[in-house]
Image (cartoon, rainbow, N blue to C red):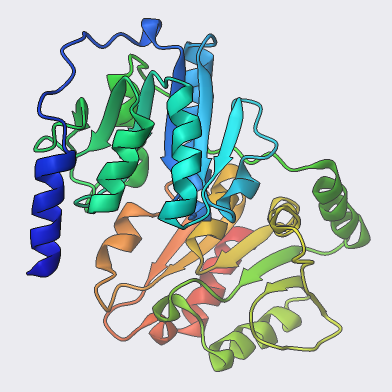
Length: 337
């Protein structure tokens, strides 16, 4: 009740009383700010659709991104971005970042918050004070000048980006993702590939941010045993301490090195949506495992791989580890034939 009261009070005092009465015209916009300070790497990979398509259609527009400390890595080599601003994940520290953005007099801010904004979030938007603010399903908020009304619980995430771009005057956008590696990461991936040029390489990821979408140690070992017999060179991206000379453990001092191994592998097996989106960006053969339990049913649909050479396996009521190892291996075999 208290949370609802605070949100209602915040809306009353922080929501603009009137929407902008200026006609929106992308040709008159000189800068776009994309809010991705949720710090999610997978979401940032998908957001690369926006940076590329806006810049190609409107090369005069400067593209700024407000990101987190972790998902910043996806942006560092992206040629379509003019400047990156990093959130401290602390509202009082971030006020200085918001004020810096305010000074830029942003033409359009694109906000990906799908939910009801909290008081501090509304205050953030007010401080940034862009000329136009675009949001998702925000018709009942005056602070948003443009609302993209789409069912984000059932539509694939790329549909939301397509809808945004359509509203910005960009028809039939290319919805491929971009990942730009640095020289060091590229050389690291190439070196592993060259050392194993006569062997197929599989990138096997066992963990995600959710414990409901993490393979057990037992399931991991079952899969590894079969992959050994198939003479794969295995790159194991995992939190488990598995010491085996047949396994390559990625260097994790730079996440781009992990992504380089995705790029230079032959097949990717993962339960992590960030790695799924990276496999999509590099158009890799992919087996993606999804949990369809514990209130995460929409994940398998909204965050599906969504490209031709990807196979999606979904648990059916008993958790991610209930998927038969044989089903996983058979899916891999479809790709390595």
